[in-house]
Amino acid sequence: MTSVLPRTGDRRAAPPPSTLRSMRISVSSDMDEPVARSLVAALRDRGHEVRPHGALRPGDDPQWAVCSEAAAREVADGTADQAVVCCWTGTGASIAANKVPGVRAALCTDAYTADGARRWNDANVLALSLRLTSEPLLREILDAWFGGAPSTDAEDRQNVDRVRLLDHGRSRG
Image 1 (cartoon, rainbow, N blue to C red):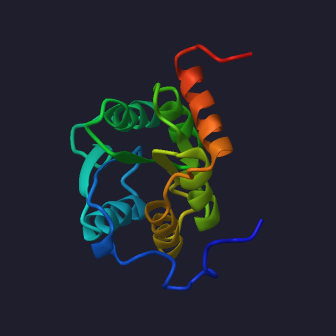
Image 2: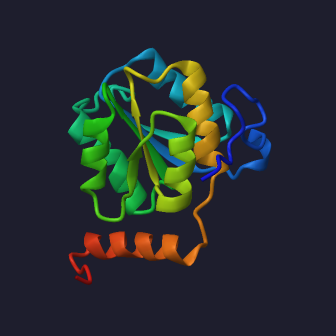
């Protein structure tokens, strides 16, 4: 499999923000860390409406399970187009988000994984590690995530459809 992404650091990795559709993005974090604040700023700079949860919204419950679920529910009910959920490792946020029917959350630690999650898995929630994600890496992951689109390949679509059936407890053995 050949990479479709330019080398790390290549600024041509994604279309300019002006060519991307503005979306409502729910963002949750269990801690008010610099990378979480950079995430919110980067999304706003790209023209997206940010809907903060957890430690990013004063008075909100910052527990990773609570705020990740809140962000994921907004995707599932259509009040947000996508979400980004964060916790120290990203694992708990991903697990909590994936418990919400209709959500396909992917923990991404690099741009290639983010591109693949959008393309092959039609992921609608990006999970990030507050510990591992630097600001330059955050930009690369966001470029890949928002620059990617779901595959139209029949096998990829069948897999995503199978996941949808699992949400409804109707897998075809």
